Length: 445
Image 1 (cartoon, rainbow, N blue to C red):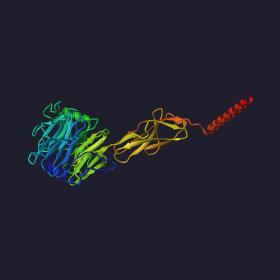
Image 2: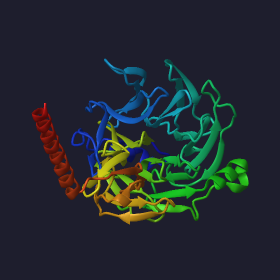
Image 3: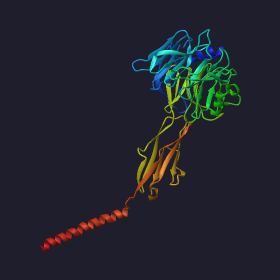
Image 4: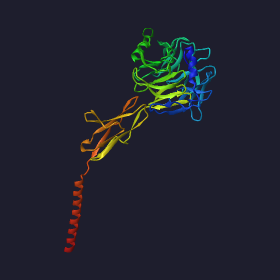
C-alpha cells in the first residue's frame, strides 16, 4: 500500500487485475528459467502477496483479497497444510513480510478510512504469539521493512498519513521490539513509498512505489552517505537530488520489490496501471534493464537467496536460478596421452541472457592466455610439453562472469609405432632362439 490516495486504490486493483490469466505464474524471458518454490491456489477471494524465509529456511507469506476487499492473512508453509498465523477482515494486506533475526515482521494496509499501517511481529519458533511493533499513529506509518544487519531495520513509509515518502531506521532487541524510540527518519523522498535494499558493500538502493510524474526511478546512496545521515539526520538527510541511478522503462511508474545479488546487480519488479509486471535486472548506472520475467498480474516482493532471485505474485513464490558452473569433466586432474586429444568441459546451469565461454591456459607465472573458442568445452591435442599445464573457463551472462575450477593435465608418454614393431620382433626372436636352444639340448641328451 502507499500514502498517495490515488495509488492506494490503484495498487490493490492492479495487484489482482489479471488474476486468473496470471494463475500459472511468471513467464521467463531472455533464457531465464522459472522454478516453483510455493504454489498458491489463486482464487476470487485469495491471492499471495509477500514472502520471506525464517532462520530454518521455511517460507512465511501473506495473503490478500483479489477484489479490493479487506483481508490480511499470514501463513507459515508446512507439509500437510500451511499454518494460519494471523487473520483479519478489517484491513488490507500490507506490502511486506520480512525476517529480522529470529523474528518475522508484517504490516497491514489500513482500510477505506484509515490510511496508516500497523506493523506486527512474531518469533519464528513460536508464531502463535503475534505482538504489535508499531501501531498507527506511532512515529511513522511504514510501507515495508528491510534489514542490513541482524537487529537493524530500515523502512520506507511516511511520517504523516498522506505525507511524502520517507526512510526510517531503528534497532530491535532480542524480543523483536524496538530498543530505541522513536525511530529515526533519515530521508524525505517525495512521491509514494517504495521498496529498498542494500548490497554487500552497504550501498542503499530505493525505488519509487509510485512516481507522480509518471517515471519510476531507482536511487542510490553510498554506505558513507547512509552512515552520515544516520549520525546526523537533521543536517545530512538523504536526498533524491543527484542520486538517480536508473529509470524504470515506460510505461512503468512504480515498483513493489527490489533486491541485490552478490555481484551488485539490482532486481526490480516494475509495475504500471493496465500493464503486465516485469522483473528487471540492472547491472550498471543508467543502463538498459534486462527483462527476466513477465506476469499478467502484479509481481510483488523480490529476494535474493542461494544464488537465485525469488519473486512473489498472486499464484505463489517463484525462483530464477542465477548462473552456476559445474565441472563437466568429473575431475580437476585429467590424464592425456601424447598424440591423442583431451577434452576439458564445464556444465552450466541457470543464468539470464546469452551465455559466453572463454577458455584460458594458466602458465606457471599465473598469467592467463586465451585459448579455444566460445564453447563449453576445449579440445587439446596432447604433446609432451603440455604436462602440468592448467586450464580454466570463464562463463558470462547478463548478470555476472564466473570462473570454473582449474583443470590440470598430466601427460602420459606413448610408445612410438616403430618401437612397438622392434619390441614385437625382439620377443619373436627371443622365443625362436629359445626353442632352437631347447631342441639342441634335447638332441644332446
